[in-house]
Image 1 (cartoon, rainbow, N blue to C red):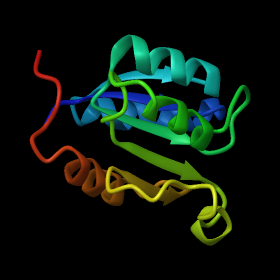
Image 2 (image 1 turned 135 degrees about the horizontal axis):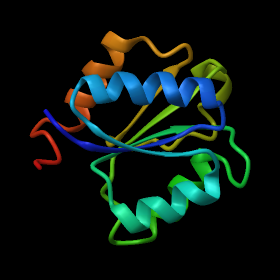
Image 3 (image 1 turned 30 degrees about the vertical axis):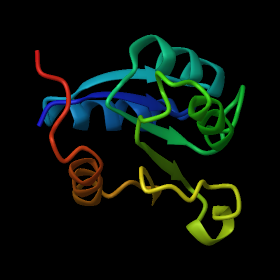
Image 4 (image 1 turned 180 degrees about the vertical axis):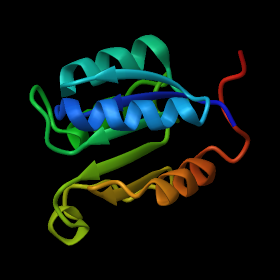
Length: 127
């Protein structure tokens, strides 16, 4: 499966690690480091999947999600939220939507692969 994935996190070490891992899985990865850039790049590239940290400069990932839902070009993009905080602490701000998932950091790679396959059952980008 090859998908175009937009990765948004303000932790540069984590974005490098996740980007490298996703590329070994033959995904195309676009990296941004803040919520404002996340919204901008999602509209510009319309990726197959967004992986977004909850707490970032510019705007929280959950706030950007609400903005993306208002745009017909980005409303159908599935989102995997990641955070160092446990789900129980964040569930009140996370959307309850079948096309969203949550993983707590550190991101377990086998679970990441499983969620990507779940959210993109037909694959994604084909060069």
